[in-house]
Image (cartoon, rainbow, N blue to C red; front, side, top):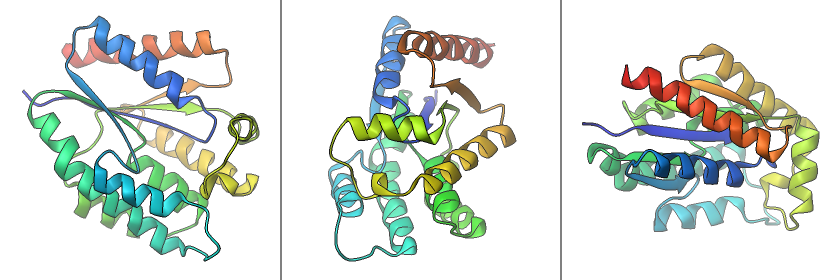
Length: 210
């Protein structure tokens, strides 16, 4: 039996680390075999690409370069980690996946949608998330949280207008695919977010098993 692929999305400061812990606890409670991973990254080579892409630098990184780096890391991630675990019947939970590319490089950077769709098709094939949890909150709140953490990577240094576009793209994608997305109000307290995530997983899992 093929495994289940869950992705977690959201702007900076949305609380993905805490959300991942909640998801992990839910998986443990249900006795499921799973692997946690992230994008960009997830394999040694993909992590090197992540560092290359996100490190602040004096040289301007072209938008297309950024996009191709993301998909290069994703190609390695899918081929050597995501797909093998899914074929083995395990659950895979990834902190970000291709929705982030549409949100950040598409919405944020303004790169053309057809280009992203072509890369998605070529790099992923039929490997798509079964469920995507979107942690949604105003960009101002998320950025304030992210800045409170300290050092920022290259993308976290973008202007608020960039993150507003990212958020709106995420929301548009969720509206377009309600069967896959579950939107969580990440402006709530941590306890409320944890309850909402667990409820979303319970609801989806009941439908999945039916």
